[in-house]
Image (cartoon, rainbow over all chains, first blue to last red; front, side, top):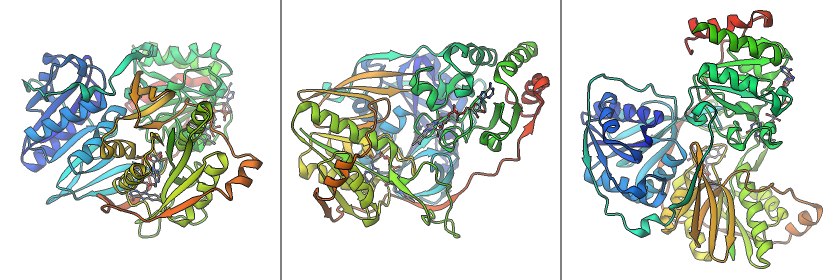
Length: 325
Length: 246
Ligand SMILES: Cc1cc2nc3c(=O)[nH]c(=O)nc-3n(C[C@H](O)[C@H](O)[C@H](O)COP(=O)(O)OP(=O)(O)OC[C@H]3O[C@@H](n4cnc5c(N)ncnc54)[C@H](O)[C@@H]3O)c2cc1C
Ligand SMILES: Cc1cc2nc3c(=O)[nH]c(=O)nc-3n(C[C@H](O)[C@H](O)[C@H](O)COP(=O)(O)OP(=O)(O)OC[C@H]3O[C@@H](n4cnc5c(N)ncnc54)[C@H](O)[C@@H]3O)c2cc1C
C-alpha cells in the first residue's frame, strides 16, 4: 500500500502545483507509515521526474506513450487507475486543476473512492477516516469534509501547500504501461493552442499577479500593468468587464465566473472590489489595492493600499521594484 | 437531438455567507437562490443548438427539494421544453451524479450539458462522475461547443491554453464562458413556462460518499495599511521586508 500522487508535466518540467501535490502526498504517506509513488502525465523527462525525490517521492511511474503528452481524460483516467491498482494505493492526490479534477472525478467512480476537490490543508487522519479542509462558496468559506470510503482522492488547491525541497534526494523512475487502446483516446485533442503568456507566466500557476480593472481606462494603458508584472515576475489578470469589452483576453478574467487564483501577492489596479471579483481572489495571501476612491470596497479586503491614480502610482512601483534589484 | 441540461440551485452571487450556530449547515434564511451562473451557459447553448437544428428537445434536470421549482420554471421560461426534478436534497456530488446518470440513461439523451462548477460547493466533479457512470466522454470545462450531425467540436480549457476536441454523441460537457450570451426570460417565455411539463421523480442509488463535518468563515483581515501615493515606492519595501512576498 502506498500513496499515489499524480504529477502534471509541461515541456519537460514538473508543474509547480504538482510539486505541491507531491509534497502533500509524501506527508500523508509519512503519517500513514508508507511511501509515496508518483505517476507522471504530460510531457515529462526522466531527469526531472527523478528530482521528485526532493519532494519526498520514492518512485515515479512513467508511461512514455507519446499520445499522453496532451491531456486526454479517458487515457489519463485509465493510466492512473492502473497505477493505483499496481501500488494498491488507498490515497490518491492530484492537483485541483482542470486536468486533475477532471480525472479525479472519473477515478472516484471507477475506484469507488470518496473525493474531495479544492482541498487547502493536510488531512486529519483518524484510523481509516480522513477529514480535509476545502474551500467552498467561492472562497467565502471553508468546509471540513469527512472522507470515509476505503479509498480517498484528494485534489489540492494550488498555492495552499508549501512544496518540500530536500536537496539531493532522488526518486527511482520506472517505466510503466497501462496497455492503452485507441478507445481510451476518444477525447484526444485534434489541436492544442497555448496562449502567449505575458512574460511566460501562467496565471493559474502564478505566485504573484498584477490585475487591472475598468479604472485602467483602456487597453492602450495596459503596458503599465505589464511593466510592473514583468519587474515582479508576476502574471497579469483583469476584472470581468475588462475582458467582456475585449480590452484583455477571457483567460485573464478572475472572479466568481472567471478563474480563481490564490497567489502570495495580488495587486489590484483600478478594480472596485465587487463581491464577484473578490470571490476569485480572496484566498490570496497578500492583497494590495490601488484605487483613487478611498471608499472602494476592495480596501476592506486588502492588506496594503494606496489611494491614488493608477497612472501615477504604477510607474513609481515599477521603478521601485527595479531599484530593489 | 435530445439535450439534457443539469441545473443547480445556488445562493445568488452577492450572498453574504453565514452558517447555523453549530456551523453544520449553510444558513438559508433570507438568501435568494438563482440558477448556477455557469449552468445558464449550458442552458442557452442547448437552446441555440436545438434552434439551429430545427428539431429536438431541451430538458432541464435538477436534484433538489420543492423549493428549487421557481428556478426550474425560470429555466423553462428561458426556453427549455420540459423539466425533471429529482425529489431529494443534493447530499453530495456522488449522490447527485447517480441521479443524473440514471435519468439521463432512462431518457436516452444525446447531449448532457452542465455548468463548469457549482458556485456554492465548487466541486467541479459531477460531470466527470456522470461521464464515468455512463461510460461516455466528458469534456470539462468547455468554452465552445458546435455540433455537426452526431459530432461535437469543443474547446476545452486547460491551464495556459485550450484543446480542440471532437467527440461523438452521447457525451457530457461542462460549460463556461465565452460559450454564448446567457439568455434571460422574456414575457412570452414566462407565460408559456407555467404550462410546460415538470415531472417530479424519486431518487435512486446509493447515499453520499462524503459528509461535511463543519463550515468555517475565513479569518478576518487585519485591516488595510495605507501608503501615501507620493511615497508609492515604500509599498515595495514593505512587500519585501514586512510581508516577505517579493
Ligand atoms: C453573476 C455575476 C458574475 C460576475 N462575475 C464576475 C467575475 O468573475 N469577475 C469580476 O471581476 N466581476 C464579475 N462580475 C462583475 C462585478 O459585479 C463588477 O461589476 C466588476 O468586478 C467591476 O469591475 P471593475 O472593478 O473593473 O470596474 P468598476 O466597478 O467600474 O471599478 C473601477 C474602479 O476603478 C477606480 N478608478 C477609476 N479610475 C482610476 C484611476 N485613474 N486610478 C485608480 N483607480 C481608478 C474606480 O474608483 C473604481 O473603483 C459579476 C457580476 C455578476 C452579476
Ligand atoms: C447550502 C448548501 C449546502 C450544501 N452542502 C453540501 C455538502 O455539504 N456536501 C455536498 O457535497 N454538497 C452540498 N450541497 C450540494 C451541492 O450544491 C451540490 O448539489 C452537489 O454537492 C454537487 O455540487 P458540486 O459543487 O460538487 O457540483 P459541481 O461538480 O461543481 O457541479 C457541476 C455541474 O453539475 C450540475 N449539478 C450540480 N449539482 C446539481 C444538482 N443538485 N442538480 C442538477 N445538476 C447539478 C450543474 O450543472 C453544475 O454546474 C449543498 C448545497 C447547498 C445549496
